[in-house]
Image (cartoon, rainbow, N blue to C red; front, side):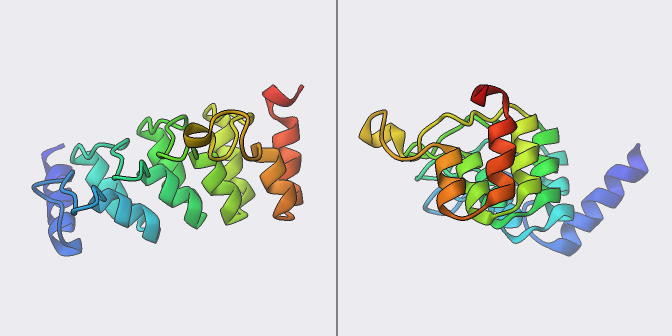
Amino acid sequence: MRGAMIASALLAAVLGGGACYPDAADWSGRTELMDASSAGRTTRVRIMLEQGADVDAQDACGLTSLMVASSAGHTEVVKLLLEYDANVLLETIHGDTALMHAIGSGNPDVVRLLLEYGAYTTVREGSRNRGVPYGETALEVAERMGHGEIAGLLRQAEDYD
């Protein structure tokens, strides 16, 4: 165990930053975990999570690491964040969830993962600021964007019985 911790610390030093302050954020609240998640840096994300980074930290707009990884279509990072109990139900200040971000990426594997971890499909895009029912459901967004496979996944999801 000690050897693994030393190896992890050395790797963190080589990869740069975050070794002492895994939740350090810039002026907008964006953390190193969010940056690594957005860039698809799975090893860096794993190290920061092992160091205790807050998997559900939100920036000033309410974005999380899960949302930015979903938006970029980084399946392995999304899977890792979910394994560390990232909350799929968190919303941005506009009411958007990781599922809405994943649909935008067009990656059905990310959408599938989020659904497996309990993402709601009936939340309406932008519903928080503008009052329900505003915006489109996840299915409507997928259809509008021409993501047929994703639309099929959403139709099969529980809350579309």
